[in-house]
Image (cartoon, rainbow, N blue to C red):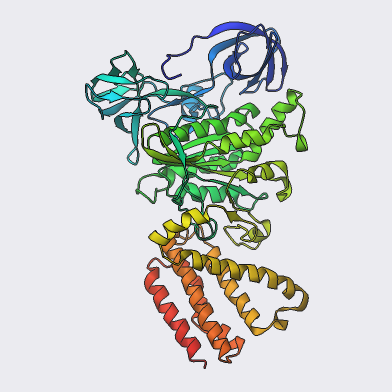
Length: 586
């Protein structure tokens, strides 16, 4: 833990048998979840079962050529992460080994087994400015100093949660490495910039509060119809090619979180390569600096060892909680939790545990709950407030939302963004199905939208939902009898719904303006469609033929609002033109 120096490694036992990533050792003095080193190469593993003098270990690396009789060494401590300055702008594997450091050690991008490195640079010095003075009383979690970690983020050095606290006897500014004590207390406790924390243990907080502020994503369909709160949970299920990863990339780039932790869990190597290459090149729209200045990437591709895939989401959520303790709003993207569940299933089968539905372990729902429940809006133990928002992609085989991972995730999360392969094939992006998706945060977030965007935000959104619902019902009739057989008012409803789909719910991620849409613009686009709706139905009631109403010149301009930088003036003129052109018809 954080008070300890490096644990002493001692030789304890020998390998009894090997089955893929699962190794059984005999005569090993260890506790559950302890980290051990397996074989002559010292492969990192974790104790997952103890029965008599036999200990079962899941190894985080490939175990080929490991044989019975080789030594197993215990550390006496659980799998933990290094927490301190240097985590931002870093790219880790599933157990927080920095990939750039390992590449430098190996001399190539292909890593040897058994290679290891600390999660943060132990030799690099940081400019520490104390926030406490001699004689001040500090408690666990209190902020004792500031380190400018990146141009975008100040790292706040805290008293570790497992310290007692006390009176400050010394605190000096200067350049220090992460293991040099920067503050000393009267009880002898010395506070470093570096902490350690077990990944499977949630960091403490005073209170978990009801979130009331939205995590603005810049995606109209999310902010407008299915918002997520800061400290909320969301799932993005969808079949192959429907846009799960791209949606998470957009959220990572544009969501108004202070810190982004992106966990690539078992994803294809080319997708993770794209993330690793693109993110350092991207400009942060909030600060103008590089996006990596406030991002931590955890890359665990599908060809990496299965056990490391099982641990990577815990590594990510622990790093996110650490920044939350500083008072930051953190967004964690887990892509994808299905690969994590498949890793659990493989290890469970090797342990010969009783399988549950579709071979997943019986504790699948419990593990998913433990992970998502670590999200939330918290009052921290240092009286700051911070949040962790968790957005997990789910990859159901064949797009079947009834499979166990999707269903168990739906029981936990409060926002459901259902991706649709049919929409993706029609080039409608984001390909989120508005009839299947939902958000349970709407009511608690409406006051924020009313105060910060427009007082009639909920009413205008409900109007759009009603029109889209009516369109879904009418489409079934149209497939049977054709559009021309419908009454004129229903034909007009279909036309209004088309503008909702094309101008409001659809968004061009490659356009420099339309890729991000602030809530105010989302509101104005919807307002323009509502203006057309109201004026068109007035014209219809006055006896104007439906063809003339639909054929006015101004209406197609609705589709151009999204790409307008100065949209307010454009919308004002468009609403006036649509109203006057329709009134001229009667």
